[in-house]
Length: 112
Image (cartoon, rainbow, N blue to C red; front, side, top):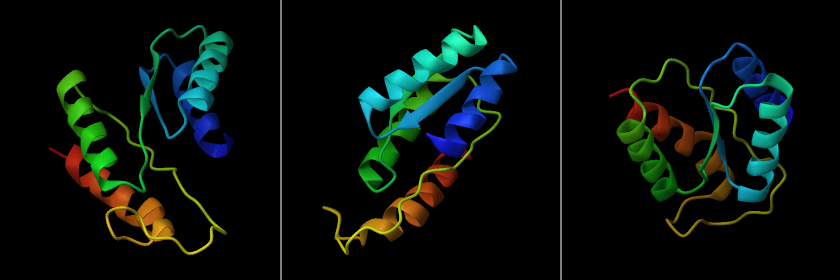
């Protein structure tokens, strides 16, 4: 939703192979269908990613590096706000992990 979806729509409109990295399979699939229909670009894909989980970030990065011949642009747009204080299963504060640590790790893993 929001800025991320707008960016993905514009990339797809320019015929870019576009990977939507989403926490929710249902919302992600709906966004993929909408973007494909609006742009005619069949190369819009969904991959599950929770930037609040470093294990999820590592799995996502490994899959991208394994499956994609190259990566030209990375848009880190995930973020949460206003959540009650919570600790992830990895012992990290949820908002900090989701908004900062996950995107930082993802960027560094994809740099190759």
